[in-house]
Length: 195
Length: 79
Length: 240
Image (cartoon, rainbow over all chains, first blue to last red):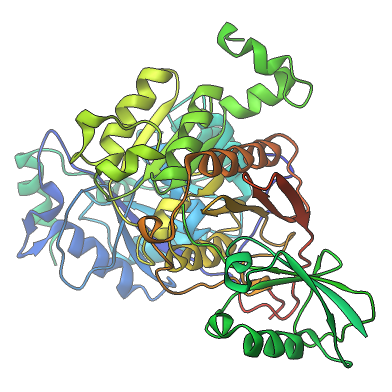
């Protein structure tokens, strides 16, 4: 919408962290499954908060109903796929580190070292398979209009990250932390990352 | 000085008039509203009225001039 | 370009360029009562890309005298479900997203962020207060509209450019008066809703509006607009 909205870049320089989650068909209710005694998404939430880097940590959820203790849950009403949720979150929060709600092995040290690489240009993690990771990336309003236009005809976000984001290479140890839980076996594997 | 007051929507029913001319000493819009509220008691509890002077929205503390046309609109909430 | 829109594309204010903007736009309609159903129906007929409809209410018999989209068989059903079905039958090319909730301060940011332009089709001051504040925070342009009896208002609000509701003291709290008490007639609903839609289209296509408060009375055949300047000390949009 050219000329319709003024860009509001970072009024106050507040970096959020947003955990994206939506109901899984493969492993229903996975985000609430316990890993070492704590629901998966709560574990991620607490890790992010413990870094002290973020204005706030928010769980952006497509679940119709969810009850999580001590966790800030905001309902994601966007329809469509991940790219649409991300656009909606940029519209609301402006600037944030996006994290997957099914990545329980993320640690404080990885988050801290990744955020240090951020200097106003959006960045995305590049894992050892050479793929940019949309759910370990920092988004901001500088790219939202272009992302919105892009999303009208293309729903896969990877090419957009490859073209417009600064890619931060992760080593093997760091890449392993980004593993996402999609099966019962993954839950067992994830238990190994508990402290 | 003389001002012309025009009433719109339900204010026409409230005051029983479409418009009226009023002879009034030098007042601000806010003071005129007080005069009207005394004249038409059912206006007393109104909040959020929109007042235009010579068809421009104007705030309460602005003084009126001779010949001004004051339009009085109610807030409307329905949809 | 789709043949079905030929008659509107021929209008110079629209033309193919405008139609492209219409088809790639997302609009959120808050409220699916009188103004909401007429607004949503018009936008969908014209081919808006995505329309989000928000209301937690169910259809009642008294709605049928002035609300579009609902029929006798729908009484008792959820408004957004009935409306979504009707809208999809009118234009299957438009994406319709029903949200069966009431706008609150908790969900406002999530819901209002879904559109390029937001349409006010609410029936109380509380909701408009929330819209005024959150649309300003998100920098979302929106169209205020309200109707009662034979009379109504429409105003474009472009955050940072035009005045907002607070600039002229429009009430931002309270429930207002219900339509069954105050009364409203269908022609007034349709006239005001149509003005709201053309205002939204102008925002999408040209991006500009002076933010005048437009009023219309369908019984007295009066229509005019009052310029409302921005209030620099406005509680919501004034300089801090």
